[in-house]
Image (cartoon, rainbow, N blue to C red; front, side, top):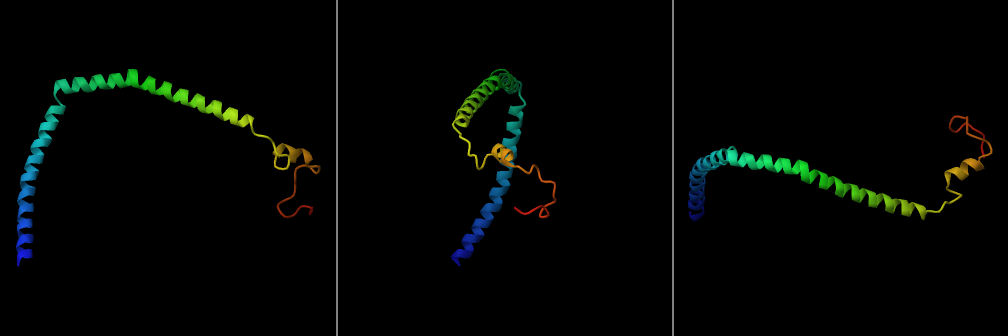
Length: 112
């Protein structure tokens, strides 16, 4: 019997709390909306947008440009360390091809 009375009490408490909670939620929401639309808040929002456009965006662009330049320099440095493999090099394979480009459809050319 104690479980049933606990569940019944919890259900009643939930329903009553939900009704009071909804009213309080609506009060908070209306107050927040009124505060958001007030002149001082909107002035601060406009100021923040202006600062983001004039200060933050150029600073972010400079940071990204610097990182990109550093990454490019490291890639060029790493590319300079790569040595060719004549067996896998495309240029070497083309130069070694004595028959020229194949004009046969797949699987119909002369066998090697």
